[in-house]
Image 1: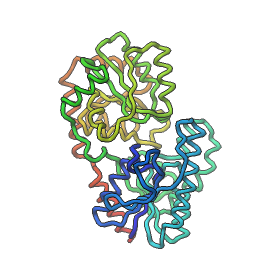
Image 2: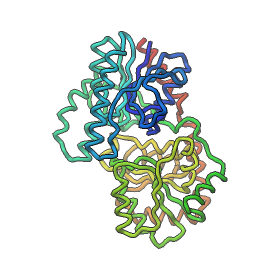
Image 3: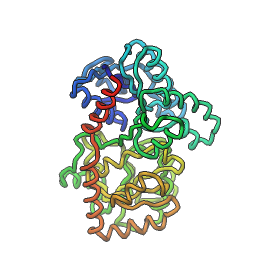
Length: 395
């Protein structure tokens, strides 16, 4: 059976889904599967339209890369890739192939399901996030629910849905997907991500003028599903603590607004740095003495902040800010990875940061728990085994 993955990003791009898909596709190819990936062309000239890398056949289609121009540009990126990818799929897929659709762009699985069924192929949905519900939460436009019946039909009539956690799985089951067709497979840290040498971390601290600071880091996409306003409130509460620095590492829809608010509040304790290349990611993550993970209320069943896995892979504690009953809050608390707070708990969060700054023993305990969690958590090899089993069930 040939496996055809569809996702907007793939190597050499480095968004989270690109790294996850690259790890999985190459793992499946190494295990003997015939793997094809349909993705967009990178901005750089490092990649050809068609090539084979590590046993994976990569087919890149033409689409816009206008996300830097705002919402309209991002919508153009979604639409152009959606159409180009489905056209490529029509001319690529054969009877009894297995199509696996991710969720970038949103609802890609609906079109992929239609093409797969018309061509006599199998179809799985790898639901990294759930639309249109995310768009409804962010925009308040409840009319977007008009697409959910078709989306639910595509889920129910597929060969299976792979979700990131139990909260997301419960949502799919609630929308009519048979429980036996839902597989929970958490994401993982990028392959090869390990604790870096202390010397490289110290060098980055010097380069970023953070020597001697207790660094509270947020690393990853500054997207709208991440609740970042409470982070600025915490920074405001800590503005007189000269030994504490809050560092954002990454870009996204909220970065410009956040930078403007930091300037308006005159927060000299907040620093911004760009996303780091994959070969520098471990050092950037290890820079933080403590990491922030956030989630906007209402999104707890719709997305899972996979930055948790990278943070724990380098053995760093976590402060989670978001709904108290969501899966990631339970993980952080029950596994001893750090502390979890609601978005209104600004004073308590600031007090906890001060407390941990002066309590290296507690930090070490949390760091050890994080490292243990990462060690026992599934990685690309285990994920490949899960997908291998799913594919064998339908072959």
